[in-house]
Length: 289
Ligand SMILES: *[C@@H]1O[C@H](CO)[C@@H](O)[C@H](O)[C@H]1NC(C)=O
Ligand SMILES: *[C@@H]1O[C@H](CO)[C@@H](O)[C@H](O)[C@H]1NC(C)=O
Image (cartoon, rainbow, N blue to C red):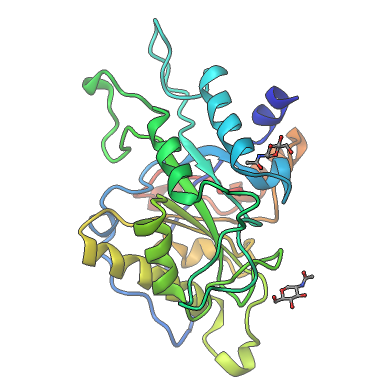
């Protein structure tokens, strides 16, 4: 069962595409110098395991650790004992349902203790120690794709997450710091539930995503470390292939992927209409989680 689950819920993720002008929004993105700003983060599509499509809310730290270990046991990491095979799955991503609806008195997101009794830092330490994407042959290393296991976390651009966890609206800087500096994550998937009515905020979806993008870029400037890989998840509603590049390295273009081949092919088909390879600086990607 576990084997089936890990295989059927590994998903291809990544970015796709071109830049044009940004849709209007009061919060404009911090100027970025393209690849220089990202320091190689997200240059290649990221691939890995995400809890949502396999488990929904029904997971905890042991389930995550077990699935991360299965990525190694099943040969999905980037190492094979005799022949080097870069399969390339090196991300283990925590999706929705890890947080309490209420922040603590300091204003920070609170992890659901019954699911993560050891805490998030212990989890990312374990994931990082797994040696997914061990690269023992430097001549085969891909520039910009740091040979390291990576851990991903989930957040939401609105008041609450899609499953009533804490959203990051108006807490973007605090949360970016918590995710990356305190908890040790490498990637943030940022969802689109419970967003404030735009008649009040008037910054549009682009503005709401620019808030977290700016927080992530600002934090990277402060710490001097590479930024969180920012994976926009606004479900392809507002053509993120036209503006996502300025904000992050990956943007989902469709509704949820399912653990079925016809779901995968449907998403490939939808993305084929957005691909503009001649404008690519980054590799063309499909982002599905
Ligand atoms: C996580 O869930 C599994 C299966 O539901 C259970 O066996 C395990 O004890 C749980 N782990 C923690 C840390 O609660
Ligand atoms: C969501 O969280 C809020 C705030 O804590 C709570 O009042 C509400 O009952 C929760 N809703 C659900 C469906 O759990």
